[in-house]
Length: 385
Image 1: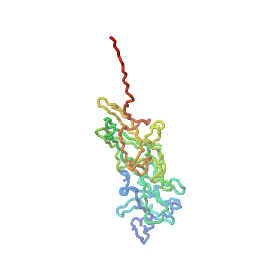
Image 2: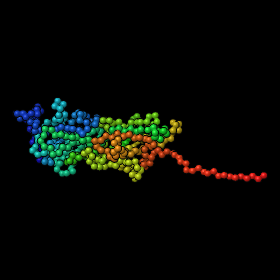
Image 3: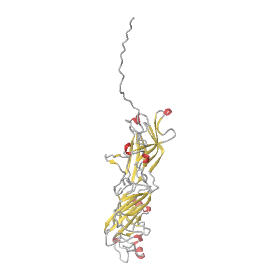
Image 4: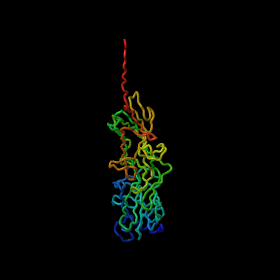
């Protein structure tokens, strides 16, 4: 269908700006035939918080629609029509009424994204199965990004859009030394200056196909999810818990999902979490594509005048590697980071603080066993006088 079908005349646009939801006479717009939307994020300002049903209203979203597999509802800039929340009418309306279209006779497919400032682009057609229809370009995971798909929609008052989160998130990360552990009891101290979730992806494009499933095109300039800890955090037998990351609902800690199949409407980058097994590394962690946590830190115990350093030194830091695969509170295996999930990690340093690049334990205690005790040998001495 041609892009210019049902273009709104200038006279009609003037009328739209003041019309109500009722059928009006005198060439005013009948909104009962207009394509309008209702938006629902999957979890209850784009740049400073996780998006919820309420704070989504503080920004705008973009949406495009296809009729008979051709673009029908779109903007002149090919970014999709901009939708804004109007408090006075408690509904989503067109930011530019010149973008408004009316329902055709056939059904339509709609693709939407949030926030509108991300400037998504749309293909001319969504006819080919599996093809990318909507692209949100050059995302850098500095804010929550949402996408939505509503297919085979017929004429209705408002098209319901359910938005999905495009990224996974690290909500919090803390380290802990339980009192019953040998690390705590031996007086070990761990000082952390930086954390990095190695092999994560945070730059590229989010692409949504004809069925509304998102995937990623990772940028060559990709950066991993990392955060400097300032001031540094130290845990020991007087301060047994330290918080390294506390992102809460703030717009921090996002990254591309790692799963290799569609989970929560997103196909990830197919990265494997390290499980803590040395045999699964096949060399060095730093030379692998495995996803793991790297702590830049110092580890030592002993008196200040005679410290024994196991990682780093008095004026230097070293690296500790920690697996991320494990069990959640419901005893489910966590083997991938899935979009729309916020992960809360508690690293328990009970008898070890992590692993080397080769996968060996950092702390291997010097322990002893008694294998045997020499038998006494009797010596009989005879002295003849």
